[in-house]
Image (cartoon, rainbow over all chains, first blue to last red):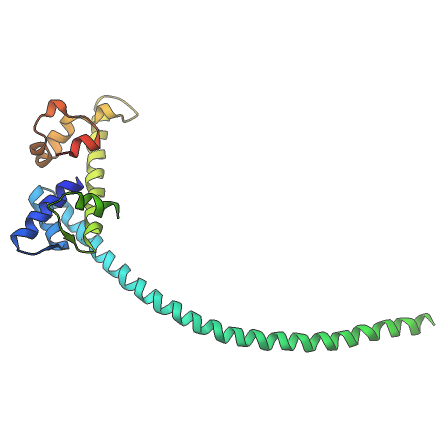
Length: 107
Length: 88
């Protein structure tokens, strides 16, 4: 079936004196071969393909944006780590106080 | 990628636009759906519950796809084998 459509598309392409088989040539070939019913759905698939191609390029842009966000997040995480370190020092002091209180209770 | 290779197996076929294999794959889907529908009708006619290769025969191709019929010179040699079917 693929070879059938290919050779017919190729003939359509040659009639128009072009070197590359284009989507229009495939659609015309389907008509010639008696698969006219398919043309609408095939064309819809073609449009869908166009949209997806555009979305892919947009996704690429988003990805680069994410990289920039990642750097900002990295800075934020560094600050968080510093804050946690400070809290740990304070927390250590608190922890040392409790045993003292405990000892005073015992005594 | 597979479709592009199959298309370009024909030496006459030159360059193919990027979107063309997408169109061909969609056409192939529709063709196979039609073929399955017609074969299933034959399955039902024979009172069978399971479709098998015997139901996919020259009658299906002959009635449903006249263009393909023209390309099968000798129907008596027809077999439900894709490679044989489409070898020119």
